Length: 94
Image (cartoon, rainbow, N blue to C red; front, side):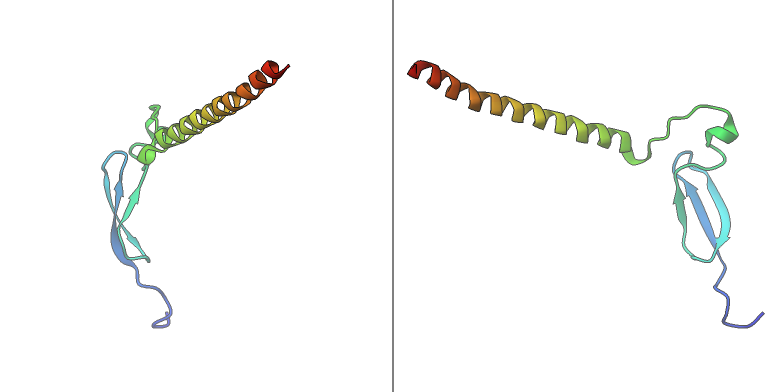
């Protein structure tokens, strides 16, 4: 092998956020990793069904769409209230 041509191959620790398993490996990046699911907790390998929600993504999605629905209903109510007095005033003018 030529010297200086290949990247450094350093030991790293891989930390599974899902189950807390620490895996010792080697990598060219030279820094530690955090992963969401590993072979110790993945449903394919364990045979157990597991709901994987990394960093509350489902809750953030639901919160975002609940806020949008509330805004849309508030806008619709505001528009209905804005249109209603015009119709009442037009009916009174006749």
